[in-house]
Image (cartoon, rainbow, N blue to C red; front, side, top):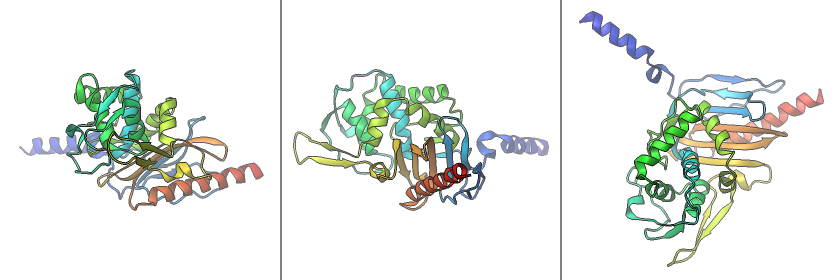
Amino acid sequence: MRWLLVFLIAILATSPALSEPQDRKTRKVKSVAGGAEAPALKSSAALVVDQTAGQTLFAKNIDNVVPIASITKLMTAMVVIDAGLPLTEQIVISEADKDLIKGTTSRLRIGTVLTRGELLQLALMASENRAAEALTRVFPGGTAAFVAAMNQKAVELGMWRSRFVDGTGLSSDNVSTAQDLTKMVAAAYQYPLIREFTTDSGLTIRAAKGQPTVYRNSNRLVSSPDWRIGLSKTGYISEAGRCLVMQANIAGKPVIIVLLDSWGKLTRIGDANRIKRWMETRYAANTSG
């Protein structure tokens, strides 16, 4: 029995899913900055990639497999668009679209009728969970087929350490790495509709009954004159912390930014601004020399 116990321990220790560092105490930071000190980011995992050259500019715990919350909705959007379903088709929000995982509330009332395009816009811009759930529910084959399509898309993108279980991101079983998410952001950036919807500042929904409801972008930076953002998505559940992914142009360079597990409501925004200042300082120093 002793040899069997030793064998099992050895197997567990070498299993990729268990041996990789995943807790918030793990710290692996790498920067290729020349002439500029790497930013001290507070997000548990972070990655900044030069989108044109494919060069990693900053990396911190990029292989940690962690929950990604509503960052999941970028994959949801790609699956919806890839399916070629009519964006003008009307969909009714139903009781089945309520959040039974976290028990979150929604301003999208049961019985509201919106087009698939409007639901997609709400899911991406305002991270509206009922909108995302409705999109998965009415998918041909239902939610199971939708989730299967999400995971198939992940495989096609080479996101080998990612897994999706729903279209909202409410489950902590939706997991990925900062490394994988740069691939997802790069792929999502190729969809003009995703670029448009994720950077819209607001949307007013006029339901059949009641007052118009105004939705705002969940990322305040899209409205900032100091930023040039081409794609954005936020995410939050308690297990994932505050998350943010963006495509942006900084110091004349298109970059992809991934920030995961930021604890504190404004930490991810602060980290994004720290990255921006760092890159501007770095490239100013390089060009002045």
